[in-house]
Image 1 (tube, rainbow, N blue to C red):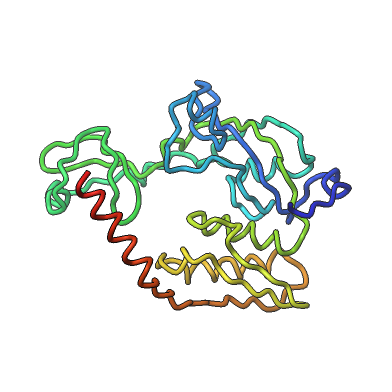
Image 2: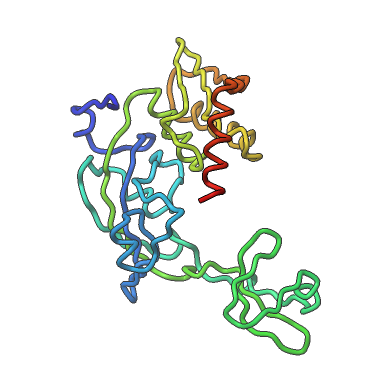
Length: 259
């Protein structure tokens, strides 16, 4: 069980606090739900995906881990409190910009075996864009976010505040490496040094080295007293199976083939 400071949890949330929140994001004008990390809400509004884990979002308040308007609204809340906030476009997903509407030759799409049609979302230079029109060998695409220019409303609840140094680091690892089970990381604090052994799955993700730098950066920024961060890579030799185990596996395979 995580160590929690209940007295501290009753204190208002302030900048630099490590918390987890649940939320529902709606377009203010229509009331349409466009984002949530609550599984039941996702299923109700057609946002559910089997490969997505629906759980409270890790956030360091003031670190812009969420949109600016929501980040600001977290300050002053208490653990367990549910709150609604209406956020203007400039503090949400930005204002619509005409300079983000581009015209690209149709041949560039055909080189990549893409047949663009209006409404299609494509990726160009690593950025998503929506096809607006196709005519005369030219394709108009819009790099603005679907939510650009829209006022949004967030209903959120502060589920937990993290106080222990090891768990703050675990929260950062969960934030930057969501592909790994955060409970599988081993974290030890030795005076002003943090020693981190990452879950084995991170060894197979090529971005891990860059993500380590981000984690270390935020540890130095938001966790007092830590002056060194050590990431330890451990590789263990795979034990060879005993002869009896190999024979038993072959028997099972042969039996399955006959069936």
